[in-house]
Image 1 (cartoon, rainbow, N blue to C red):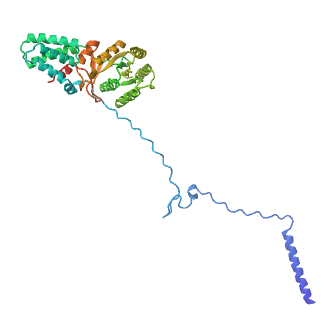
Image 2 (image 1 turned 135 degrees about the vertical axis):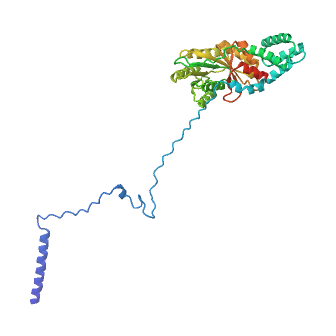
Length: 392
């Protein structure tokens, strides 16, 4: 009986304890405890956020980040080196030896013939033939031969020095040292001088334009070039190359464009840049005289809206002889030529064309090309020319 009482007591105690726990758990008005927040992580600077070894490398560790992009190097623009050409003064004297080598055969032949003991009609015929072969022209040759025959008769006996003096006198008289060979390239106030370069394609017209720019720049002038030969694809490129060598601007237009428009723009550029001289290279087509006349006439008229055309230089190839003379006559009918530039006077050229072209056109030879070099264009000097023909 006592044992049953003990069990009952124990069960009663357990039941009370359980009831008390439930009461405490579900007691009204008790709020649940707020959840505990985890501690916030401190904000780290950018350097500390990177994993170990990403920034400053740990000893013995290598970085895994890619290197920063490398900015591509800009291409270097290489400016063409600007040349300083020699001045025009003394150019022909410096190039005299080249002229002498090509023309000396004429001089030696004439001196040998005139030095003979007996000058009969046969010898005079040989002298006449030598002069005509040298492109002196028939009319000037006859004048020279008649003058020489008269002087020889008066002189009687002839020493080599006297013969040379006689021949030099006659050649100089025919070359005419009194002609005004001045290149009119001085600016007029704020307006540049304008030089029109004309001639048949193939005579060296564009090359002569470029070489003339070198002559003027060598004399201290500022030059603008006009590539008005728009009908030859290579003409503008060629002229621009000449200009870049010496620092001269080249004005050009579209291939096949209006030459007068290019010439006008070149003169406008010359005025804007306060240039001394504008040199305009024109087309050299001779398909029809009428077309050439219209084209060159238009170029000249358009230029004269801006400035005066001071020089019209006709470029002739000295090796073409009398064929070149016919070309010269066609151009002389088209434009008012003020001077002649004879190219290729070295080599196989016959120097007598200087005499014949001046006589036929009534205008002086002002420039001569005595070689293929960039500075082989020289102002024409009659005395140097005749001395070179006769030799020392």
